[in-house]
Length: 120
Image 1 (cartoon, rainbow, N blue to C red):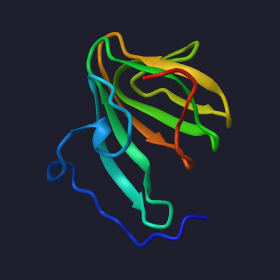
Image 2 (image 1 turned 90 degrees about the vertical axis):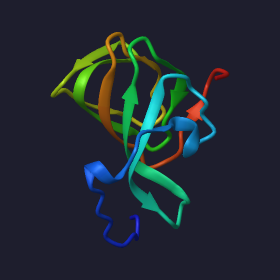
Image 3 (image 1 turned 45 degrees about the vertical axis):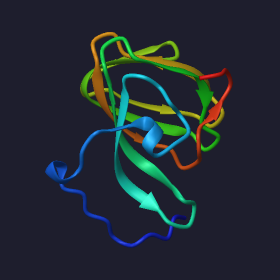
Image 4 (image 1 turned 120 degrees about the horizontal axis):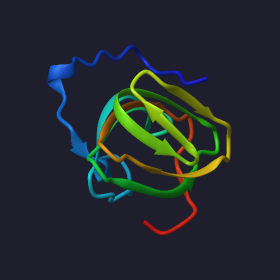
């Protein structure tokens, strides 16, 4: 269980940053807003991600599983194509690549860091 103090994020107080600002992932067209940062693990397990139209994220896995809720647009996670309002839980160690045809904003929660299967 994550032992983290309360954290409040106001939507207008955070800017979209390149994903590389919180991870080693230099992926063009993918941006992040950190929602919750866990000091003990040194990472943000809860984030918003924004994909520009046509942006791609390489083949990877989440050892602790992943939860995604689509707020805007569309996103392909592996063989699943999600639209605004869709939710997907991917089980631990499920391998998938990600892309968005028209751009999107998603809520993402992953308790463990991403592990890449192919080079970024």
